[in-house]
Amino acid sequence: MSGSRIVSLGHYQPSRVLTNAELAGIIDTNDAWIQDRVGIAERRVAENETVADMATFAAEKALANSGLNAADIDSVFVATCSSADRCPNVASRVSARLGINAPGAVDVNTACSGFCYGLALADHAIRAGASRNALVIGSEKLTDLTDWTDRRTAIIFADGAGAAVVSASDEPAVGPVVWGSAPERGDSIVIEGWRPYIQQEGQAVFRWATTALTQHAKLACERAGVATTDLAAFVAHQANSRIIDGIAKRLDLGPDTVIAKDITESGNTSAASIPLALSKLVEKRAVPSGAPVLLFGFGGGLTYAGQVVRCP
Picture 1 (cartoon, rainbow, N blue to C red):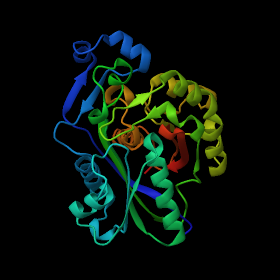
Picture 2 (picture 1 turned 180 degrees about the vertical axis):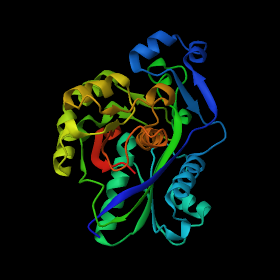
Picture 3 (picture 1 turned 90 degrees about the vertical axis):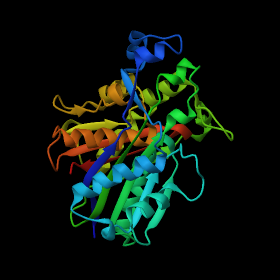
Picture 4 (picture 1 turned 60 degrees about the vertical axis):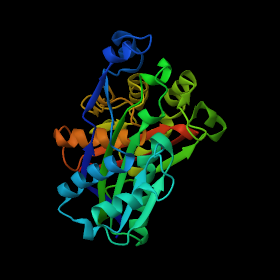
């Protein structure tokens, strides 16, 4: 096959909603400050679900929307940086729960850019003939790693999962990936130690994201042969509404381009944020089938990855 395409999407969010007003009762903050600072009104918190649970629920929905079943899947890629278990990996657990027989099962940890990395790996495996139908999942339980006394991070992070079924295609509908990192700045976002909390240098990450990343997002469009003005949607990692707006402005998007802002109701879900936001846009029919969509993830590492896909 000459390429791959996203066949379907699915997402899952825990039922527990944590509002800004509730956070104001825990730490020194308020709704107006949070919304002005990061653009978040509420976020979801997993109380009993694990990373593997949420990944499975999202994958089940993606499979149900695809017309395929577990027997058709031959590889599973799960992007996560928050799984409590190191072995077996999340991909193996999801595969077992879904009844997938003998798949390639890979966990990807590039933090917030993880879904785009996983999508690229699935695309490459399909192009190389090592896979035909893949599940690519982003799933995070970041509230397990949140210090609820630190208002710099407590207001941001949340839980959820998004998944895509990716299949071989005669016409490539997943564009060439642009990926990379700035490892010399890796200490800007860390989750270190045995029982860690997320720590980040917010201003440093903001400056890096809004100044250094636009060129890579534009390159992803160039490699796909799509002008930024022709994009139907821009789905960035839902890190901060001001970062999303900053990158979008520099991309010179068309007036009708849909800019995903799921961060308002979902918070920052790291590797889950892009498939979660894209799945919601497709569910709402906000983007026409077959239209070009730029996905672009960035975060801990500091890593980044992006590609243009055709909307399923």
